[in-house]
Amino acid sequence: MKPFRRRQVFNCLGGAVVVLWLVMIGLLIQKTHFQQTDQPNEISSKKVSVKETGRDWMEIYLKDSKVGYSMTQIDPLGDDFLIWEEVVLNLTLMGQASAMRTNIRSVVDREFRLKHFTLRIESGIVRFQMSGKVEGLRMLIGTGEGNQRKNHVILLSGPPVTGAAMSLFFKGRPLETGDSFGFLMFDPSTMAQKGVVATVAGRESIVINRIQYPAFRLETEMWGQKLIFWVDEAGEVLKEKGFMGLTLIRSSAAAAPRDLKGEEAYDFYEMAAIDVKPKLRHAERLTYLKLRVEGLEKARFDAGMLSSGRQRYAGDILEIVQEKRPQKGGYLLPLTDVPGDTKPYLSPGLNVQSDDREIVKQARDIVGDTRDPVAAAAKLMAWVYTHVEKRPVLSLPSAVEVLKTRVGDCNEHAVLLTALLRAKGIPARECVGLVYANDRFFYHAWTEAYVGEWISMDATLNQMPTDATHFKLVQGGLDRQTEIIPLIGNLKLSVMDYGYNSIN
Image (cartoon, rainbow, N blue to C red; front, side, top):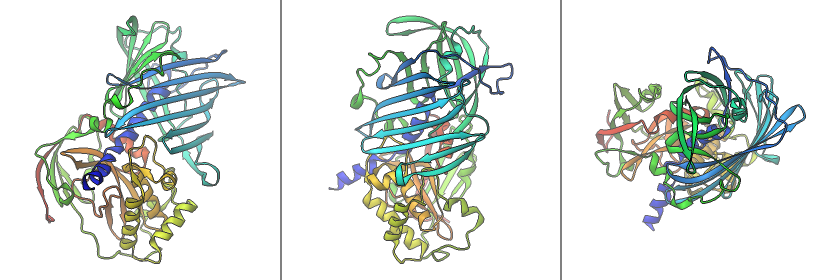
């Protein structure tokens, strides 16, 4: 029985990186709308004419294993365009085959500026739905369906532009080495809107299905990860290469769905793990850890978070001291005198629906009459640990969905615990970083709760506070979690010292 329990817990370590990979694959598939400019940072768009329905198919590879495909269709719709984007993925996560289907339908104007969209993700029994409508420089976002639908407002820095215009933009357009193009990327999964510059790096030949094509190579960078596009002389996108060996290759309706590797593909969690020496024994009992951290400068990562709370960072040395669990909280529930810096962590969010009726009821049923926030937080964490099956999930985390399905990896555990804590009036925030397991560090998500002081909580591993191998990189929702993307593949760690007793 013990080996089975250990495997189930271990299966959801590393889940944090899957969400980030889904974000990056979305950026590639949704592509972007380019606009040539003498000043690449000035983002603008260009009217195009689409008279007939057009479909583009791409095969998705993880290194040399075919793991999925995408289809993008564009149709004239009066004075607008209707764009349908579908992605099918089969990945292996800790030895388990996982499948996901994503569907995005959007309406854009003739300059491909977004008017409204609907995003649906299906992964096993997990369903996630989001819709958005642009009104000026505001995006009105709705999540869930029926009685569980929640509305939010996102402020925009400019009009969001979708990606379907990429191939249309290049058709018939002469390219020269050194040309630069500015574009505005909008990602519905994180609500990120980002200006990026792509450069024509040169000309080269590429081979697809044994056919050689002369092509232009365009290079850009998103969140510290290089993305490369190959465009043929007719302006057709032939190939795209990006994050962690992710590659998309132009295909056809007949070939794209064939020969998906599924269980034969690379294990995605394993690919993202960081080897470390020397090895740590009984990591769950560690109260002190000293690491040498390399790769932050290369990734241009803001290390400010590494010197906060229980972490101290100087030079390239990080020390983590496990905090003490308070005997009781610094206030009684409900919290009335809310410190200013904790107020944002009481509000509901896109995926942390702490005002949802079912989540509020569940939190109330779990906590009962308990007024001490330490005891209440412990009850909520124990409930999530016990009632959510530890299974890898290919989807965007949603507290409402997790409460309904009762399955998920570390992301689902963290988002549900965060929502339950907020529902009971305990400020809480999501954290993403690394945790040690099976002789390596894996990207992982957990929660911090304010009980008079901040304390770390891991509903996946049933820890309060978390062991000293929990190495926090960022805190916040998906919009903040994307900040660690540049670290993946660049971060290196080595153990300098560790201990099983608190270090003062």
